[in-house]
Length: 166
Image (tube, rainbow, N blue to C red):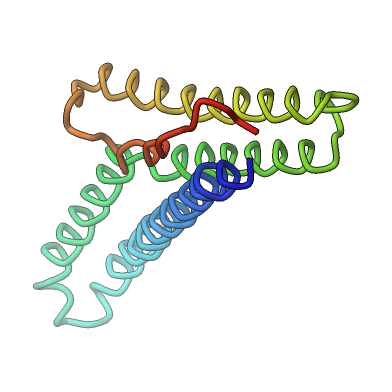
């Protein structure tokens, strides 16, 4: 069981944690750029009459800024970093919770023999991972990305499992 906890559970939890962190950073970066550039447009427009140099270049500069905002907003919509961040973090926390419940024989693990608790943990962890893979596959199918790997791909594949979970 220690091998399963280390090779599968810990690996999956770390994978979800890394993906959540990456998507959070991407989302916050996109939103920060959109906010700053969006706030800059009215400032440029307001100062066109004050600075003669801006009068000639204000329109093109504003158009470029608006185009950058549109591209970043499009990437945000396409890559979905906020929903991915939330999903990956949720899966990480769910796996972590299962580890703790198993370790302290709480919740559904209470009163179970070691064999039954081990089997239940494997079933529950694999169920979490399978549900996420199904979610990603369905999203990719809906978006026409089947076979393209989608955002970040799938969680790592499980290591070869022994016939017994003892």
